Image 1: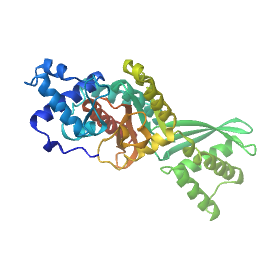
Image 2: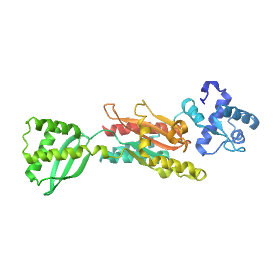
Image 3: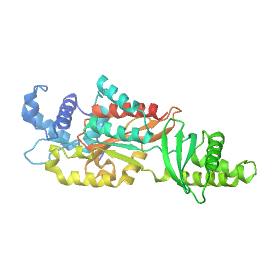
Image 4: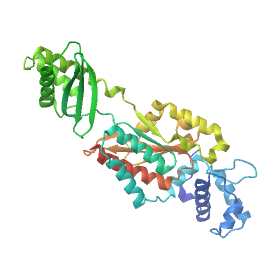
Length: 347
C-alpha cells in the first residue's frame, strides 16, 4: 500500500500527523488524542483529534497497537514524514568538532574506521556501522628486516601514512643484504601501486629479464608480494560498534524485536550488502522497517551514506542501525557530515 502524497492531506491532518510522529520518535510510545489536545498546539477537541487520527489510520500512515492505546506511525507513515515533513537539524558545533577530532587522530586507517563506527554509535544512541573500503593499500615504501634465518619482518608504509608490520615466512634462508636489495627494489620500482598491481609489474619485469635482482632477492619479492596480495580479501567487510545501545529501556517491552535485530547484525554479510546498495547514492539513504526484507521482522531502520576519497571515488559506506523510532532529523545530517569527514581522512 502506497502512502498518499503529503499534498493530499489537509493542513489539520498534516499537523496532527507531524505531532504524532515527533512524539513517538521522542518517547517510543503510542500517542493518544488526549495527549495531543493537552499540548495545545492543535485547537481541537479530543473527539475531533480522534477523528483525524482515524482518517490517518485509514490511509495506512498510523496504527493502533492496542484497542485503547494511542497511535504510532507505520513504516509508510515514517517514510512520508522523512520525505515530506521532516526538517533536519544540522550537527551542532560541538558534534562537528568531536567528529573531526576523532577522525584527525593519526594511526592506521583500520583504526580510524573502528573509531568512526564507535563515534556514530555514541552520537546517535544506535549501533554504528562502517564498511571497509574495497581497495588495497598503495605502497610508498617497504622495508624487510631479518628476524631469524627463516623469517623477516615486512614494514609496509602506505601513501596515506598507514604503517603495517607483517611477518614473512621464508622458504630459504636469506641474508641481510638480500633483504635490503629486495626492499630497495620494491620501494623504487613498485611504489605508488597496490600490491596486486605491484605483483603483476614485478612478474612482467622478471619474466622479460629486465630485473637486476639476484635469485635470493627475486624469491623474496615474489613470496612477499604473493602473500600480501591475498591479505586485502581477508579483512573484515563490516565494522559494527555499539550494538548494546539497542538494549535501551524501551527494548524491555519488545525483546523479540531486539533479539531479531541482534541476529541480523550477526549476519554481517547481509547487512554489508544492504549498505553496499547505498554506494551509488548522491547523499544519505534511509531504509525504514519492512521496506527492506532483512529488517522486516526486527522493524529496524538504517541510515547510510557513501564516503569518498579526495578524487570523488566511493570507497565505502557508513551509517547507523536502530529501531524505526530513530531521531531521523538529527541522525541523517550527522551521518552525512561523518561521511564527508571520513572521506577527507581517507585521502
